[in-house]
Length: 296
Length: 330
Image (cartoon, rainbow over all chains, first blue to last red; front, top):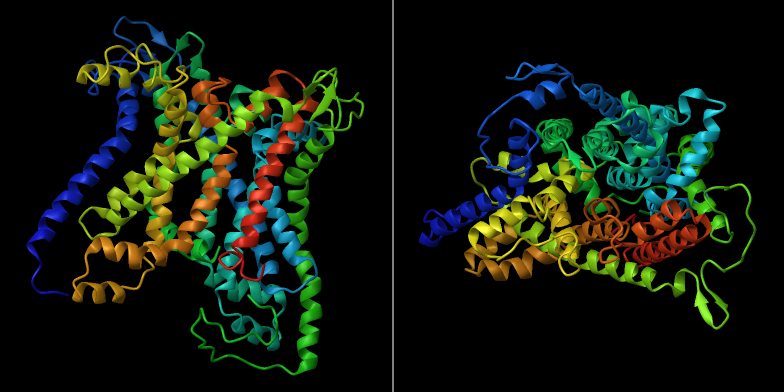
């Protein structure tokens, strides 16, 4: 490294810090507003950033605790927000695990095995994926309606249906994992197979342990996609206690009666799982996306 | 990647493979037969699921686009050929392809895609370049950048819809306070403003993701070119255009293409902010309105099919043009 830093560097560092700060303020301002609303008494949208009468009323209600106001009136929590959060997390985890399992095994086949029509299958999957999910809603509704007559946990208004529907977005993950597998030297597995290992053993004990970074990334991306999904869940789920948080939070916003305070508390809760995961897994996300992104 | 055996020396792994063994031909063919059988075992569960939840809805939509089915009685319908797409009747053209609203939806979608992805790419690049510099608290800044992406779109779109509200929205309040505008603007209903409001919200939401992908590419760059450039005293702007940009271009292109394909299908941001307004209606919003609100399954399916064809053509041309970057063996 250069021993003498040019004087201009100092100003450039200062400028980039200021730029960064301004940028963070712009990014975070709407979120700070939401947090502020969730601590404000009443359901008024307008007001200053620092609540004038801070109150925990919306948080009490969001966490399912009855709230007694200063006037002595007790409000019961209108919606099971924590249950919605639990539903969201449950659906997202199960669907991410299934997506990971299915896309890893098929990516292995695409990356390591030779069979007729491979390129065709890979490309058609990607093209099928391009059909907007909103427009397949009607067809999927009919599909799960039919399935529900035979398999009750996979019919309408079940979490099973939402999970299966979320598997439709798998093709991109298969491409990502396949790209990563392509970058791993295959001679290790070949040696194992020559030494008598089965294909499954070569996959399970040699390739998988080498691919942990990309598997973490795909798990997180699949988790995020499912937990944020709205159109499908809003059509398939009906009962209040079955909703996901993204769907349920909308119940606070009726025409002419927007319960902004309660909505804000639910919105903060809805961003929480992903933020926590991000803080934990940042390193892997950046590293894994690099590997997946460059190779495709 | 080539699939010929024995595998060529892998450039990615640096060609160091101490365990490389050359099996005799007979063993290799036994291995290959065993693999062929295993290949389908590995693939079938995934193919079944995709056929049900991705393939079937698409096929059904294409089928219904040639019928006069309606939502109220979906089991009884007749085939009508291409009538939903384009038909000449009594001296006038009818069908999706003759509907000016559809073409304005196509134009809106293209405008939205080009402008929002353009802004997101440039902003994402600038942010990634700044984040790539060493400074204290970088991890926290990076996490903060990602938060907009972590909030469900439906929630953040509602949030923005309220901030942009014409009567009690905070944006109008601030702009009025600063004296930049004389009276409250109706951001989401004004024909000149609503598309820009939608683009602004999308940029707010998606720029962090572009920045993350660009940052990932930047961190892969070898540091020696930069040291050489520094020793030679080359201006940083020149270094960026001559060294950095060409090196990250492949990764950047992949990110841009995936964003473009995503933006062409845009639905929730537009629907939440401006409902079915024609000024901002995208192709997805148009098709959904025909399908669900007007209950015209045949016509809505035709619109969905055209939308799918447009995106599929773009995807195919990308796979064809970019086969060096993606997949490899494609």
